[in-house]
Image (cartoon, rainbow, N blue to C red):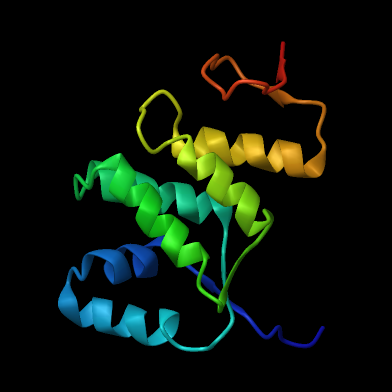
Length: 134
């Protein structure tokens, strides 16, 4: 199988890029992210990045949502599974409320995108219209 044209981004690069912490790593992350090189972000990595930004760096959720949406709207960025518009739609659910976790809304979006029957979960705080299976 020939090598792909894109590279995957890890949360360490995303967090360094968005926080400029530490500066020397942020420069390296920016060199990759600000390039024209095609990059791909897993939805798992989006959730992990959101968690680190809100928990470790104490960035308000609305700022995390805006920042991640700006990141995924970059021309050279794609997501592994979700269309960008669907990812933006579900990330918006996390903006003003801690009711929904970043991981849960992204999982729900994947279920929608894959046309799954639903999601087996004991967590009853999935977005409205989510098909919770028991």
